[in-house]
Length: 79
Image (cartoon, rainbow, N blue to C red; front, side, top):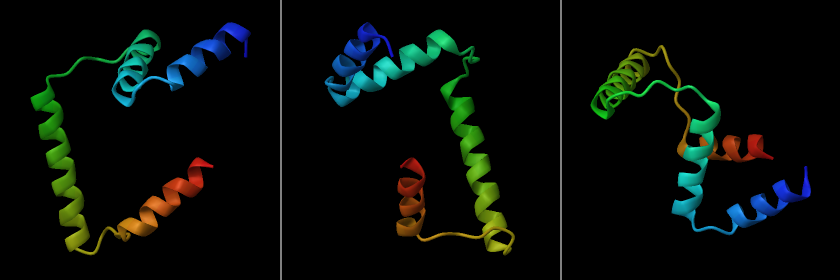
């Protein structure tokens, strides 16, 4: 990593959470071509997907994990 990149990274990590989140969005926008979508359309799609998954769970087609186990797995994968 170049010295200037390291400096920028150090400065970025010292920003408050909200500013870091906005920086992430800005950086991703600069490298990804993401179609813009109406937030209501996105919300409706998530509601449909969550309902589909819940119904599948009720039919016994999907398993569920306790939240503690799920987050423990995420933490272990992060390291």
